[in-house]
Length: 162
Image (cartoon, rainbow, N blue to C red; front, side, top):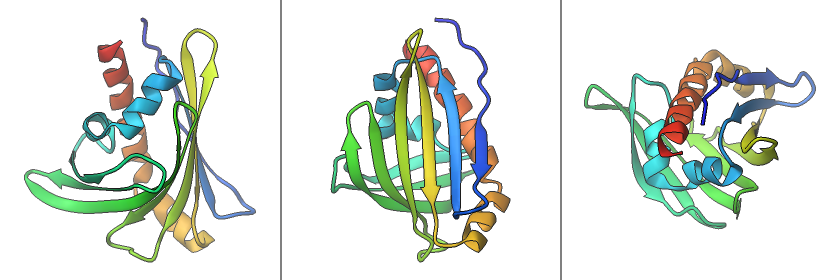
């Protein structure tokens, strides 16, 4: 399988406090989905290259919960947690996403895995937050680096496992 570099689109809606992320992968939806629900795989690709991820809780089923920590140079720098509201195999995940540093800032995220021709997948992530100020703070935090580098690592993982 040949890997093509795909752009990661990150868009903010002017009418509602959302962030939409769209990215294509040269892998079947079941592989991209599995990388989102298997804790060992998720830890290998999520986030920027400058951190490692440690899964601390993971129950990837409707009604389950999750949590992970990011470490840099052996020191914990961030913790994230949430709950799985819907897990529909190879199609959709709905979860909450909270950064421990802003415990009232809960994002409701919907991930959809769209099958494309040629064994490819279009991943759409729609993140709804409380207000525009929160949304703009997330965008200004450098999250785009973590998202883009994470998806590059996911590309590498999917290519390696293909």
